[in-house]
Image (cartoon, rainbow over all chains, first blue to last red; front, side):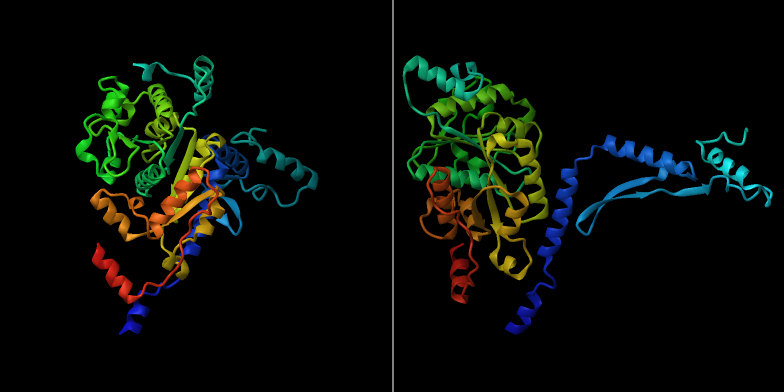
Length: 117
Length: 288
């Protein structure tokens, strides 16, 4: 009977370790003290860079911080809607390399233009 | 009222007073007891520290700064003797002498109760600072029981204090909040740590963070550790702080904390794991 009770009340796993791990992460992020405006600015810059290559859903971007091993990682979840002008494929297959090389920077440029030239 | 006419920093007041009167009496120490999180034992710590200091012969004023949620009077068993409160004094509708309730158990211990039917925002921070300054002239210790949170109530509680005691339990949320509060307090208050509600059995099983774990996270000087002792609830039920006793782990721990606050070189009380015998369990249960 006593043995049964003892087994019944025994803790399944040391939750103190879980507490410590969570606390370590929470304090780390607290101490990072990145203001929401900084996170927003980071988000904007990230999206600007990525948008040069792919079209992303600006409304659904999530930027979070997560503990990974002993460091804090920035995790950005950026849904891609489509790939921007799949570069040269539609262009005639056989072309001098020089021209293709010139085209790339144009298509990579900001939002819409490029095609105009 | 002279209480309210005082402003400015206390050391200046002290210097001025010494200069004008030639007196050398020391001003009392103003200590705020705070935590960020609610329910970790700020009020219990305040009541017991105040009791233990008074039992050592010190003159102690306790201020309940938790406006709207008055509790310190209950823990001390003084609820029937409170006629005026902190806001009455700040608003000059009562004098300090009218409002200070002498403790029934400990000579030299006084309570300035919180207003129950008012709000924290009604307290004027400058007036609060002046009140604490004037109490420091009459008492060896002014201990301010801060409300939970980090808003205006906390700021008012901290306003007149020069030292801080932070109360923490071995929980993730409590440690995080203390960490935040200590950040807000800055170096000026030289915060010292009381770790409350420790259950040695659980620590041993790995089901609760240990005192060392909490210390490692917070890196604050440890004032003492208090066990999660059922008798605390019994004493609160009766309105008789456990520090009125002179035996038992928890009472001893509060007396050691008081000695350390008073500057005595005694080790910080810690809790030991000791297996209660069946007899002890029955016996302890019967006393409740």
